[in-house]
Image (cartoon, rainbow, N blue to C red; front, side, top):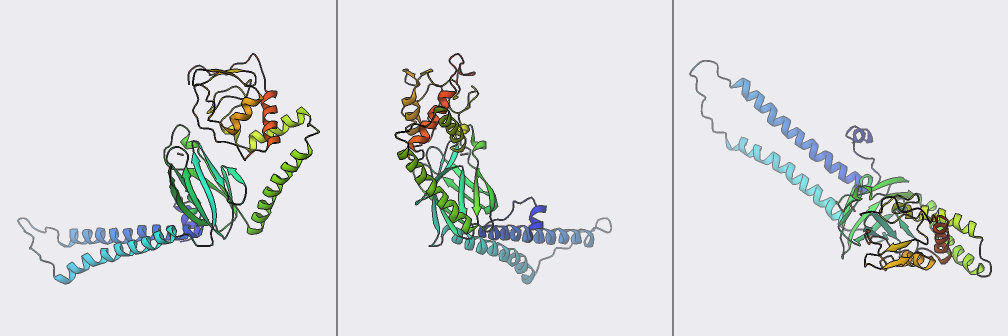
Length: 342
Ligand code: CUA
């Protein structure tokens, strides 16, 4: 069962220790089924020719198979079925008991993104970094509806249910980037609820982790150092532009005026928004900042309350930079192109 066979059968690459097991069972079931079908087919063909009617009015002799033959017909398929069950049960037990030393990552599905958080470290949206050759346990839940976390190359799939945790585990075998899909129909952008797992060599992972921690620390130090010296607005806005890309804002907000999952950033600043509760609100710095930290506080009419909070994810200077960037997209005369009707 080489990778060549996999390619021939259009199966995705195998990149976890579980993938080997799943594929073995898959090929075993397919293989034994084929052997059995061939046996039945050949026997039928044999009977067809051997016992065909040779002359008119010939009647077939009534045959009672002996006990041995009957036993054979029952026991051979039974042995196959039991073998399927045994292998399947062994893999099921293996998959549902993560090793004690596995690393935990919390996975939260929400319409329509995957959020990953590490107990000791950074958070991520739509990108999960893990080390190779180390068991990783995923504790999976959902913020809204049922999603399902599926990594074809790892052969793992687990539902994400609101209000409860499910778990899955894997041990990635080779560095690379692997696709994550949502496999539970969960609304309008279900098909776009994609993410990726980036598997790094163990030492690269350590470096990445340090980098993340250093980045956080540096941001904090910069913030402290900058209290007397406000960075030039242009530089902040430039930083904000980068942040809306890296933080995933552009997954829901456009910058060209087109309507998406959330309101467009173009011309958002100083616009008057109609809220779902009928109030009018003028978009200013405070409103934008609050929308990032507590998105449920004000829902703009015609949009759903689906934005994740960036509380704890964005440092003060970062959210300020995003506000500056949105301010730079101020266009007093442009209205959202498709704002009429949701
Ligand atoms: Cu989430 Cu489909």
